[in-house]
Image 1 (spheres, rainbow, N blue to C red):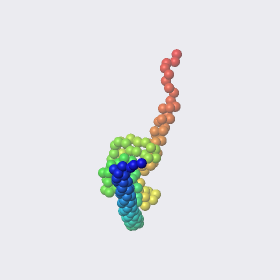
Image 2: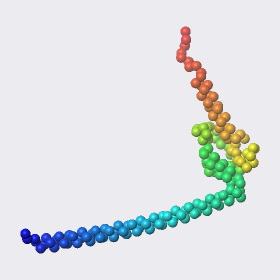
Image 3: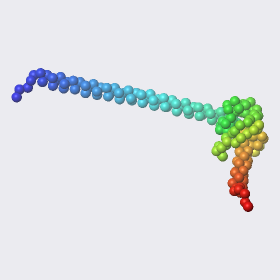
Image 4: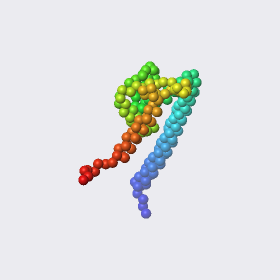
Length: 173
């Protein structure tokens, strides 16, 4: 059986090319692995730096709460005002300028999961009459929570009244 020399040369060229490509692929995989490990290291360093910064800011915030006891209440009041639907300007008037604001429109109650209409009502942030370390948002000098309960009660009563009214079925002879 005779083997063609050209075939042998061709076979060895293919084999050497295959080995070269295999070695090149292994080298690329190693380089890729190194790059991934480097990126993971950088990412971990950034996470540690972020965690340290968060910790530092939490310590600073706790100091601020200790030094300025009403700060926590002011932040709570800001969140409540935003939830109700006040704009940033309205919140600033209530909290920073300590002004009363007159409003028309609708405000949202998280407790009742609905909006209530307001017409020419006056809102103000005041010190709680029961606890001087607390703030309360009032509407027409009534705490907002009590006002929402009152409005919800009126709504429930009007719904019950309309459901209990006898329906007019026409003229009876």
